[in-house]
Length: 498
Ligand SMILES: Nc1ncnc2c1ncn2[C@@H]1O[C@H](COP(=O)(O)OP(=O)(O)O)[C@@H](O)[C@H]1O
Ligand SMILES: [Mg+2]
Image 1 (tube, rainbow, N blue to C red):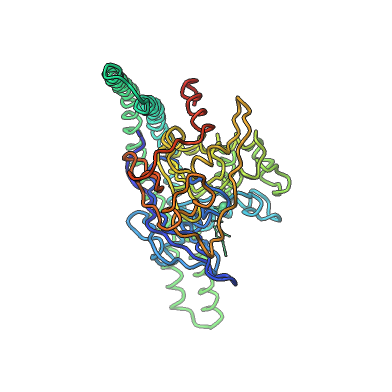
Image 2: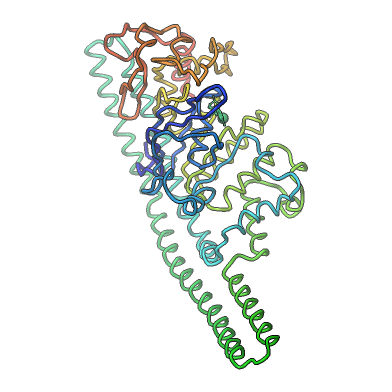
């Protein structure tokens, strides 16, 4: 993967339970994953598998009856489950933003859209920081865009290479001669990729370097301007304050003293306001972000209420609100599930665009593998509160190993052949009494005795690909994935489309 290997978030052995009238419900059972800078990690699984509880735990917005029984969530070297509420508040909604399935539930129906966006900005609004960000924003985006474009070009090519290699490696019964040929072919393809990578880097890096130099200059200028502004404002205030304090000293009557004290407070407020963002500025920035998320006529839309927007437009507003804080990580929990198919595609495209432009790292939650295909660099498949398989998008789509992943793949309708989708038999388990062993066993025709007794560990398939199923144990009988899945993989690889 060309995505950097810098971890921005790391969830380790997370266990979340809920107190209910019927007993303790085990919603998340020992979940671990990393999120790397600039990637989209999709978490996919049926309803009730613990996806939303996982994301809500990261955001710190679990219901009151939740118990975080174990684990940690590391962000910038700190455990989000342990830091003070104050500090956590700075991160939640600021460094980590979230978009939910139902945009209506995150918008206030009786407050105009513009006000909702600016309110999000005015909370915690640091004028100096905003000023600084404003000055550098164009240069920063231009620089990051160049790198993002380069990385996308390289990783697209690398994905093709990976898919090609894993396909060759999966071929069985190859003669020694064929194997030698395969090897040579792989070598050649790898060299071609290296050459491509080099050329792309040549193409972009000198440009990026130029932009970076400009950015560094702009950053210096921004720092200076902000410092000058702050000095000027502070100086004005100090002068006023000194004068008023002098007058306070020499004041005799109580009325006069009260009057001056009031004036002092007023000056302090004025001073504070000059260091905070003003309403006019907030509006200007709100309009800019509305434009960024593709709201037509933002000036007119600014004064409308949520009900005057379509579902898709409302979701754009929610995205705009999440963006006002310039988050580093964006968690999207089924953001398109409530939308119809065409609108869904537009929103997915928008999220991909914003992600690339702003260099965000994204956790994308969905029950729909079709959506995963459009979004994911890596995929984690969740079942009954556990991750049962994870790998790169190619590994999950072209080399799935867990029977539950097979079942999910069998249930996506095929666009071309209109093949009937196979619903997954049975229902997810009651999580107050989660089954022993492999929780999916009871619904799986591949289940073995051990699946009902003992929990499968993660078996390693590649450096990036792991699955928790006893089928990968060396003692297990060799089984084939369902035909519907293998046929599709074969077709899509032959068709070369993906
Ligand atoms: N506040 C709550 N009280 C009790 N059970 C809950 C609560 N919130 C979620 N659950 C349960 O936790 C499990 C996981 O839910 P959730 O993470 O929302 O699933 P999904 O994968 O569909 O997002 C489900 O069994 C759900 O009923
Ligand atoms: Mg959910």
